[in-house]
Amino acid sequence: MTLKHKGSVHSLKFWVAVIAALNVLHLWLFLHLPNAGAVQFWMTITIHSIACIAPFWMLADWFVKRGKKLEWQRWMWLFFVPWGFLWYIFEKSSNHGRDPR
Image (cartoon, rainbow, N blue to C red; front, side):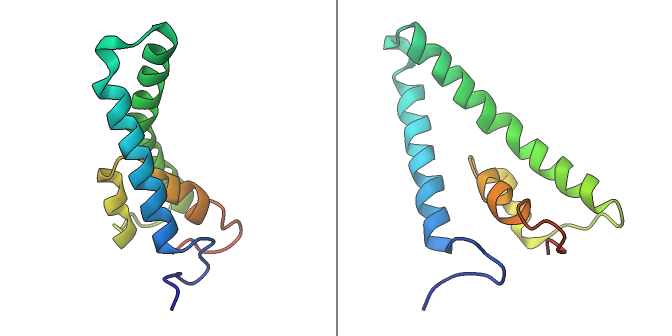
């Protein structure tokens, strides 16, 4: 049995693995920041900035696209999961012309 939702491109296991791997990488970069060279330092700052700003973009994109009634959806808990916005980009945002529910 695959854990795909209707209209989903990838399985739930895939997204759990991707988000967990990115969180491990993010944590490793953050913990090694004091010993970082210039390239690793700026890469860590960039990755951290993306992980912090993108969830706000995800919610803004969702509410602006809908334009109608603003109602909270079950998947929006991903706002609180670092790198959870990637699921939105590839699963919800890629459903052009369809109702993204």
